[in-house]
Image 1 (tube, rainbow, N blue to C red):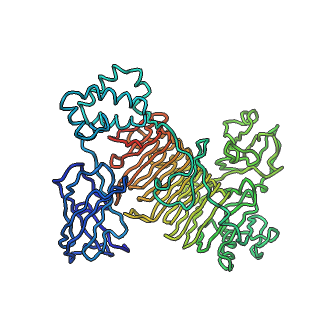
Image 2 (tube, rainbow, N blue to C red):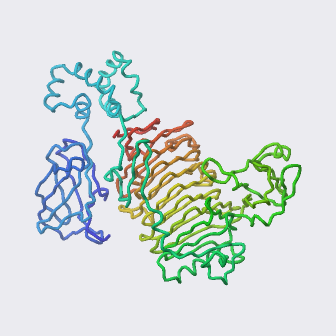
Image 3 (cartoon, rainbow, N blue to C red):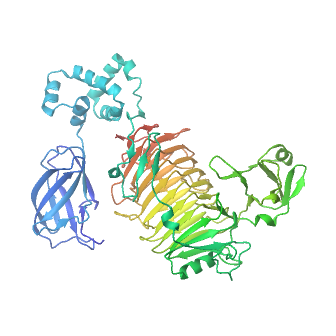
Length: 625
């Protein structure tokens, strides 16, 4: 801990929660030094202030005494039900906490929820109406307003649950105004409009360093500049089949054979960034050195992994494509190859521009009658391409084999940029990721247009970093999580920041024991997600756990394949093992599917929803923005 801090006395958190109008319960805090220990010798007077974060106004100011590093005080003012930032100023001017990270969460009393939901009167006016039995007419008028202002529906839901008398009154009005209320379905939480232009940066949990825009077509775009990584960098070329490690790799006609060789050369170059360019479309998986299945690389320089092909390079567990001999067998093509796990044809693309995945059929006769299919008897394999052509014509057919290997990049104080390089691995038995990236607090991981598929563990796994930015990437068919990101450990102030844009994943978690996700953040990190799609995971489809601070825009998650329970949910968040308060905000998102909650949590995090379409799970509250 580099600076002084402030913790709650009982739970050692950097936040407390209090009830509105409660001036009888003390707030007890511990003042800690730079080493995290209580400043037991601190005995002085101080000024305590509470800043209303929503209104940017100081709501409480008092002079208090600190005894043995412990402060106990009462809130005497009537605070709004907003988040308030607490600051302590000692008599010598020193402030606690130095990083400003201590919040007081103020929840509304039931009485105030009821009064506020009926009408935005002054407190005295509302009280007089209740006292004189005039509330029925006013509630009627207010509820008619709410029937057209659907943005307030969430307030109605919450208030009805907390106030039986209000619930009875609103039931009466519903019978009278059934037609007006038909649009107010309990779980269709819709706002009245979207705002266009630059997304308000104050909504985001961290500074991205670039802008997000919502266009008039409703879609969010960004202005991140990818060329900042590659411009001015020297190129080193890799051709796994025809390269030579005696080459310098500085031209396409003199490539090196191995990625390890290219990285060794890169680290000796005077430039501060290097492009490593794969010349092959189909890249044989053994990239470390001859005869080795090890694929662990240490990187301490800004490295860009790129493809020389417009549709990318595919690093995969299999043989060189031109090593196979294909024979025409009555219109389909046969080669000798056992243990084929999947077959792809990069000549033809699916709707996302990925290689067409051939469908495995049960007989040779079916293969002959069906385009884009393959059949294997575990000795040979037959393929029937979309255009009936011979795979030897273009070497674009990829036979994925079960081979135990793991691609791991260990970063130290650098940027790793991966663009249009894909990892298709199918381990025989080892629980490995398609790609693992481990860094430190000064390392960035920037990935664009890349796929992570068919591994027995996670697709992409990132751990310990400054920034993980993932654009236009894809994962499917993995044994655990499609996209998985961890901090070094659960922390009250984690360094890791994640941005996900236009990524898609599906069919994850077959080997995960009911806990596989498409997108999942851990350890309290900060996450921003835009235009994400995920479905069919054996666990929550998107799960941010351990008190993450997350916000998602325009994301669609559906069809959790988990067994029944709270985590059979499209979106899920929790504060398990958290050392700080988390947040989970969904803006214009949709969630649900077959027997799947739209959104759920452990009950400690209250999901904040705007324009959400879906059915909340067994949680007590949601907050409507």
